[in-house]
Image 1 (cartoon, helix red, strand yellow):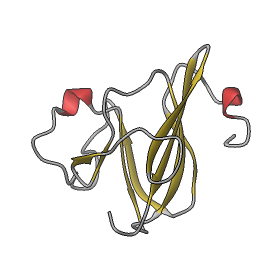
Image 2 (cartoon, rainbow, N blue to C red):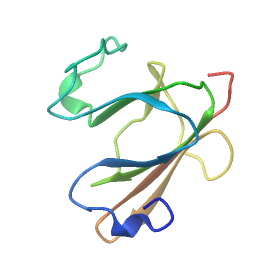
Image 3 (tube, one colour):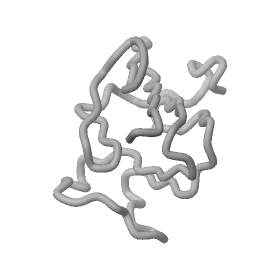
Length: 106
């Protein structure tokens, strides 16, 4: 699916690929279902996806219904970028793909 993300359902958010092991993933409506969520001062009604990876560095590809208003890593907002560390948004006619790339320093 990560190779051709347009094949993933466009009306739901889905993690399609990651370079690390996903230890936990929660989606809107099912937050806090099993493991402690480690964010503070965040309106959980606005959280669409929460996930935790084993490695501090890596890249995730996420199919989303719409562009998020903000992306947080370790409770800190990250910037949109087309190269390097941060996130990249690729718009489709029906949603898009968020590519999140983090270096070890995060």
